[in-house]
Image (cartoon, rainbow, N blue to C red; front, side, top):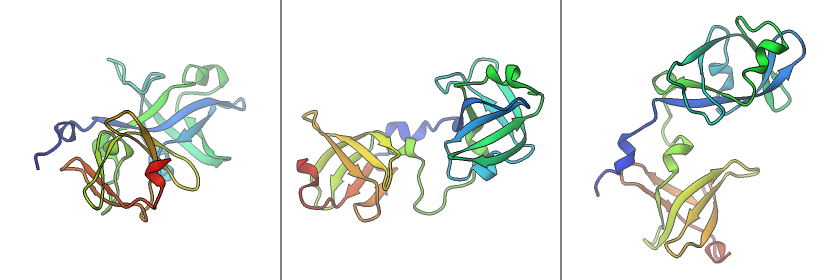
Length: 185
């Protein structure tokens, strides 16, 4: 099978955090991490790229340096170098923090970035076409794949090892073994 067209167009940067609001009056900001390894990407001295509110890098990329970070509730409190108070940090609210893709840790065997799943053709282990991955939802206890069938019907498929049997990125396919009734919902 031919390599997927979009598989060759990996993004140049990936989002690692979303700035939500200032915290306190000493320049800390609450960041919701968009990574499984926030301790690596929000470590002291790390330089991050500042995007707009849609996650797009502007023509002139602004860079911020992490002074320190610490866990706080479901996020991180991050102090950035040269952002000393609430007013300075207010300009960052609702923006995203990113890293160049080549600075991310290498994926381990079997790992994927969620953006790589979008557009994959989903089929059952028996070869029956189910549809195409439209979205990935981060939910508990399992993340969900929204799969749209050719007729427009949408299925929510748990992204678990028990159901997702194989991810063939180069072939643009995701193989599932759904429990009885899942695709009839």
